[in-house]
Length: 216
Image (cartoon, rainbow, N blue to C red):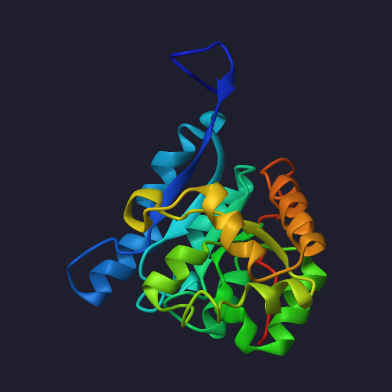
């Protein structure tokens, strides 16, 4: 574990892996993805990590392109978060679920697919929802029309987050205030519980075989 310079308490962070790995040709980009250089570097420090996060251009780089990298993460015992359902629609979330994530970054456009909502609720995969950021990126049309209420009503596990608090000019307490305008007090309490339960603790057990097939 990493140690804080200000205290003796151990701390750790997720390793972030970017989708946009190259500005070269598509074949060169795909070859680089398959060699998994970023994830191999992260795994050298896996004792200091609590998980691996795939961020970046979800529309241009579908999550399944990174299956070899995330197979290595699973085999290394690291839980996975994948950004999906923000810049791209529900299909990007189905695509991400093929990599057996514990959490989906954003995922709010899952509300467009009732069958996907049912699957997320049954699987317990948590969506990291950032209301301010979702409105800024166009994933939600407005704060009043944000998908949070639909996600909670469907039984989907949701944890509020800030995404990028500097760019979005927000803080977590503010996101909870905004959520309070969208859902009732009991639902807000469930969101708080989901946030605690979604912490990386027990990685899913994924063997060296194929990742679980999920057909939308």
